[in-house]
Image (cartoon, rainbow, N blue to C red; front, side):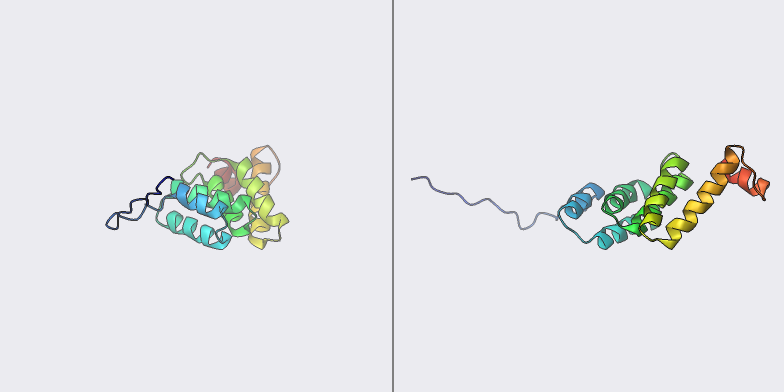
Length: 134
């Protein structure tokens, strides 16, 4: 007959820090996707794109269209990451395929400027060249 010992608790211990990784774990355990997106947006608006990125990615991978557009924007603009127009196009495309008007608009713009960068014709070559060069 073994005695079960209670797990000690520390009532004065500070609560665990809400890191992006911890929040991502909560999200994958069933947290509302929009709340996850909003937490990422808070980090992004606080000029902390590295903290926003895993939250946006988690929500985007689970189908949240606003997070998909935000992730596309981060990659399009190189906000806290290396600029990657291919990844931006992919995330905008995912959002557009789920009915996001903003995703469709951003996808069209990225395609237009990417076409110019690859030697295609464009009506506003100065603006397109500036976009393509970052």
